[in-house]
View 1 (tube, rainbow, N blue to C red):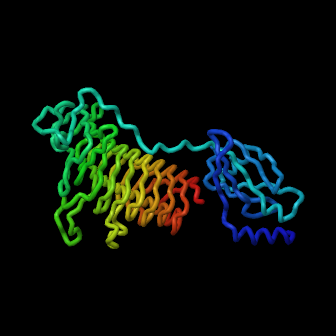
View 2 (cartoon, helix red, strand yellow):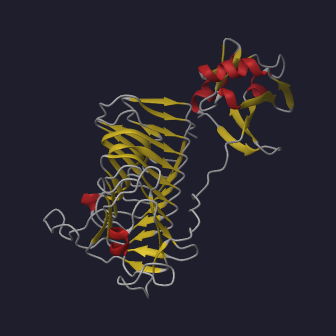
View 3 (cartoon, rainbow, N blue to C red):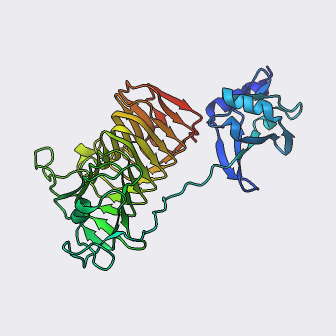
Length: 402
């Protein structure tokens, strides 16, 4: 091989793969530019990491000012393998070949919705107000005062509207114990345009419940017994053990004990379009690996379209027995540990199409024995100690890591 090629190999071995996404000239499309990593056997070598074959619409080779269309079929086949080899121009030598780029036109991924719209307030809804009374009828003209009254009174199919103000209190947990049905869930709804704040803890024990447009913010206060390990007696902000519970378009922050949202044994639970942030005892280094945004201990469900930001340890923990949880289309950033952690017996969970950046780590496994866990089609970048690390037991497919 001629000396210019050897020089290119040396330079390429020192260079990281450059992958950038630029706005396409037409709506619904984007361009992805991949630089050649080396020349092997007289061929330019391109690494097509994170390029989905089905998304590719066109491709062209650029070397300096020259452009050449590349047939679509071989590019799609190469994307499945992860590597594309193309013949370089016959002229120009190594100085042009070092500038070789493959420009791929792809379908644009739809923008993530940051919230899930809440249902409209139905006729006949029950109402809570700061000016209400628990001895009243609970209708729009005669609202109740406390969330406890509504939780004890609402039956299947009921909607409870919380008007602006604070409900619950520090040092106590409000328990939603009554169940709706699959066809007629019970809904707790913050009034449109009003800030309905829930103080203390919220424990969801009933099945077939919905909550939307609530501000679940602030420490719970001494809900649990005070111990040497937990001298403040704090609890998680939202604890979910009931099946078919949905929390949407809400804010969860300020928990000082292990998680903003904790799920145990909850089947088909859903966290949709929420803002989950700043949970943890940040001043206590012993909690640096303990306090998370979402802690899914066991059960199944969906975490989708949420903004999960600046929780002390992880954004989402799937540990020790989460089974059938999908974490999809979330933005996760500024966490002291990994954004997503799989651990021990977690199995058949999927983490896909998330934006994961600016954390200590991106995605990792910890002593994982469960099977069937997948990490696919995520964009994971700028995580200080690695984007995809400690991956034993995980199947990773088509993730973009730059």
